[in-house]
Image 1 (spheres, each protein chain N blue to C red):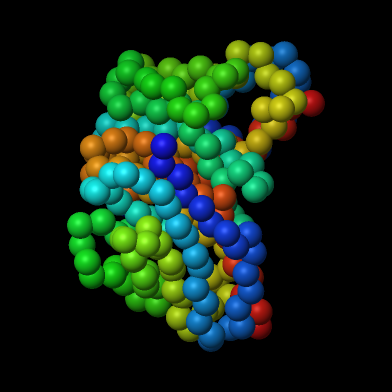
Image 2 (image 1 turned 45 degrees about the vertical axis):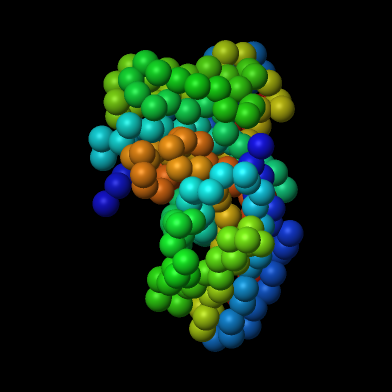
Length: 111
Length: 114
């Protein structure tokens, strides 16, 4: 089975902190994604990566950056966390022609 | 731009009954994929069913089936013999062939009543 693992299920950070959310997949998938999930808004794409060191902005990239130094790992970085970034963050991976496989999610609270 | 619309924020079904969740989408593409995902309270999103647009036959996975109407751009999910474990958020998703990006609807929360 494909396994996508996010490093934390719950995080509480202070405004202005630099925050790293880590995601690792074990199935050699080329594509990896970071989504943000908010009630009534569904899942919105922040960034995705289709290869090592390759990345593209999604629909809501402002305030976020990403890093993909190895194929199995995709990191989401909040350079200076703000309260409006309090949300559920979902990582996913896929091959070119398969469905996306998701991690368990990270609930981030910025205080 | 492609969009996915789920017009039912919440639905309820009696255990053992059948329920249908609605999804419509907008695209000018002819080749694409459609998905239904389930997100139980434990939060891990899992695939329920997928449909390739070029296939006329509706996909089926055990108690889950879809009604895919390509001309109407409609993709509904039918759950038969509903079980308590079916209670979850359900998301409809679209991906155009040859692209990486998945587009999700806003979700439908399904409650199953004992």
